[in-house]
Length: 186
Image 1 (tube, rainbow, N blue to C red):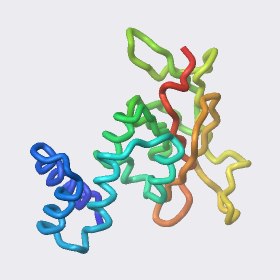
Image 2: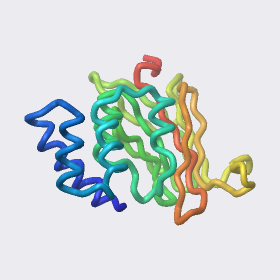
Image 3: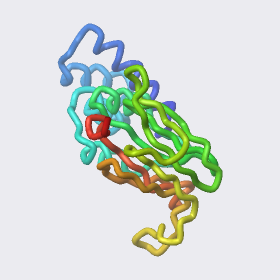
């Protein structure tokens, strides 16, 4: 199924959810519209909409995925609702933060950043700070998966996190992070 399929099902579910909060009824109506071949997508979207997630549970739910997909809208909404932020690489020059904190860092061949609270919002700032540091590493020599393949994007951080992997056409692409905003040091 494509990202467009996820989007279409999510929009349909949002319409039903605006008048009904019963997930069983929402699932029944959505499957009646899209068909049983969409059952996996419908159930996944309903879980994202109605379940509470920790960083660990969310990282487990996001496996596996192609980096070009990034986060689907329903995942972004779920992360935001649960106070979670996902860190991943995009292309060869960007570090994306998505979910509760949305930002991007320019880091061609790597870079160092930190999160800083400014006027009630978290901002991604260039350079190493006292805390909340995230270092993007491009082809780090230690970045090898369990199959011995190199992972282009990896991260070091002082923020407690969980990991999941993104792929690019079936090959390793990024070792991603999920963290809880409540764990950031002020």
